View 1: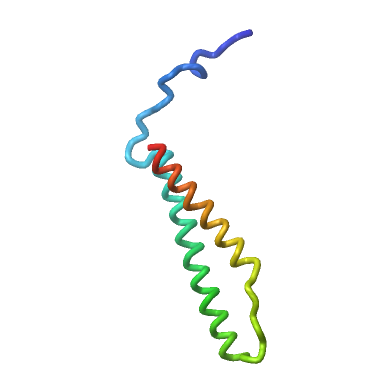
View 2: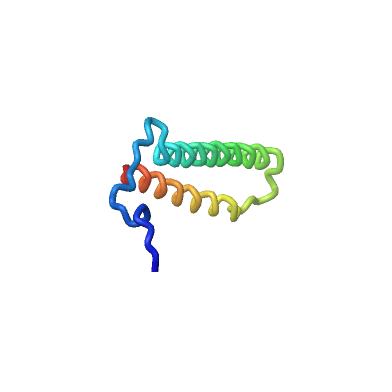
Length: 86
């Protein structure tokens, strides 16, 4: 069986400069969390407008709000993992 030495070397860490893969991952996760937060606020504002226009209709909690909370928790955990891995 042939082994490739580069797959088993201990020094797999390269000098990636200022904007390496860890920083890029943290940036993408932060952008996703900020977008999710902004859309949650926009959804809340839209629901308040609907409640004032149609007071007789009761609005229940949506599954989208619960899913957004779960995705945000996952994003926060991923961001913490990326920061701690540096």
